[in-house]
Image 1 (cartoon, one colour):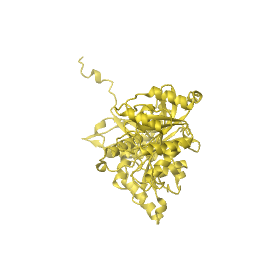
Image 2 (tube, rainbow, N blue to C red; image 1 turned 60 degrees about the vertical axis):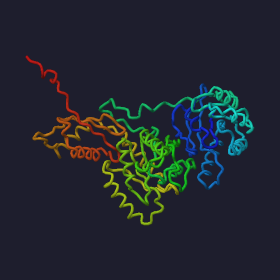
Image 3 (cartoon, helix red, strand yellow; image 1 turned 120 degrees about the vertical axis):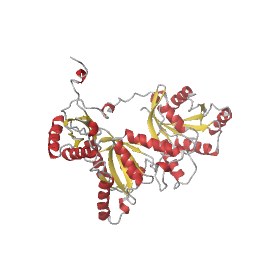
Length: 473
């Protein structure tokens, strides 16, 4: 991107709506409630022929540094420092308020190019608000409607004038080769066992119940206060992505809102936050489930883990707040037993004890993530699979159903991410689930597939004479 733009203003002036308009997707949560956005979100954006990086920020409020609003303001001030151009939004419909004048001084002190934007200009009473905006001393207000997409050509001209044509249309960097085709790609060669590519980028979502320490964990990993944290539960609302590098490997971390029990999610805003978190899980590869080790394995923890496994993502368990535990050995044994007993869907789940506050155990956590990702991408040749199948059938033959023994003739892997297998079986519908579990567990042990979901499908072999069955000689 040639330059970076920060969108700032007091709460509920339409910053997230403009952000969504510029990125071309509804990424940021939008609601009539003031203060929906809390963390700063960064994404590539486009305005006609302008290409840049845009930062959505929390609404500026006057508050002490120790309060939640004060910490939100610190995040916005950091966004101003990181930006090359500031879009200062005011609400043309409601006119100027004291907070607008206060934060206009803050923007002037930053000594960054500023474009004053009068949003909601489609309203009948907007003209008075636009005239008032001249009082801020930030130049001519640009009337737009972020919701309806009006006034954007004028905004484009103002941005180019503020930052200069040379910076606005700087040479684009060569785009890196796309790796999208590798995600969930079916395997064509049935006998190939490709080596794991250590250079592949990682997409990691961090999920858990409210106040488990998800944002604190990401801050500890990236080594900066990138995300808003605090003792209050439910601070995070949007699913925020953070770019990071671990041992030279590109990593995209997704912080998500805390997931409460469905019956407790009543408010519209929380429903939007939960939907955003579920979307982050579906698009991730590895999902770190953060447990509060002082109250682990609550019912909601197990439901979150079950959801991730059903989605086919690769889960890694992180038992946070380990520094608060006194008898560590006794609790560690208890956690191992409960993991195996309460999460039998995936045997061999990798679990790491960490302290996001002090930074302990983070290297072990990332090693577990990479190892799980390696297994999630495993490809086993058809020859090895069928030799394994012969052995397990000899040890434990398929059962007889309705007086006829089931026959399994063939197995092949048709997909990775997660590993998926198809077995040719005489009567697929009659195969008992107990025998399916036997095959899956044996597959895990024989090919070291611990800790990731396995998909197994049974199909009847094609009968080459089926088309002739109804014909008479």
